[in-house]
Length: 443
Image 1: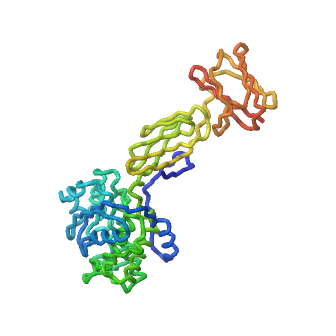
Image 2: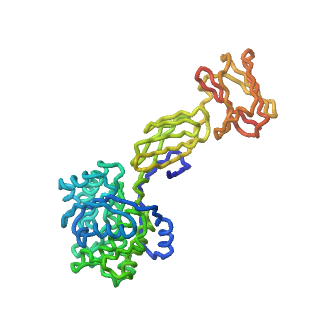
Image 3: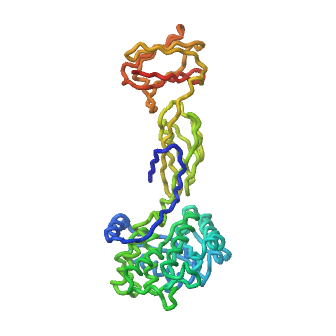
């Protein structure tokens, strides 16, 4: 179970915020570290994947390549696909067969790919013609299972860019726009990304002799499909494809270079691509408001349906958005454990309960100190108090360290604090479910 402790007073958390990322000057040490931490396989892992896309997927049969690559590394991919040449996000959204495929079973991942150019178009055009449909497709996958992850297939810029528009008329320009658009779409859909386009750029920059394109300068060559397969393997299983025996007919040298590029792209930046294990996608998050010693909590958790709140003083709640009242002033850690079949996560915040008002009980009293920690409290109108608590300013219970004698006839409390260190404390008196707090300055 993950734990994220925040020492804040009810600041809003945005758990799905993605990081801006560029691959620059990557070192082999980064790759070795990534492999060390993420190449952990206890037996075979299995992933059920549905591919929704077009010719960039069916050229050279990418799903089969991913399956064979995974098998050679000891893992299993069970897949289906819904592929139509030139289809956009909107085309898939408006095709009933898309929903038949999505609802056919519970998928671990539903891979979604738009037409190769559409995410690179002007911002306003993408906002109206692409993004809503891309998000709706992801939401349809979530409706089948709360544990399904939508994964966007970040495609690549064309070999020489797209000449129809200056902002995408080179590979680098077009690739950057596709990258940023897919990250923006995934952020909007609470989804993850298979960063094939970023791996593509790394290979073009570092291994220019490897041709990733077919003759049209758009669709992938066998090398391009193999790079895509390696990137998807690393994205789905969060493991390195390095060492795979499935080479798709490529030389061991070229295949090894493509495997390394995919591992470096994905495993060096899992947070950027929002890639999580299938059983750990729950995010616990909350904020809240306070009024004196009362708090109202606002649950912002993701992919969870069970909630356990621990308020730091022994109190608990299993409500979605509970309210709570502290009886003793102090500093308390409020903990939320959110869980579902998709995993479990923990989030914490520190709440500073305010001192209760001295007028809450409307008690008239006088406090007199005799030095050496000895105090006398005289009061009117109350015959006898029912409960006494003595606490520090951080909420620690110290009642057993002080001596307190109540003389109801004389309406006097004698308090001996000689056994505790100098400081500010609070004596809390209770009668008929009303509380009076008296500040004790023991110096």
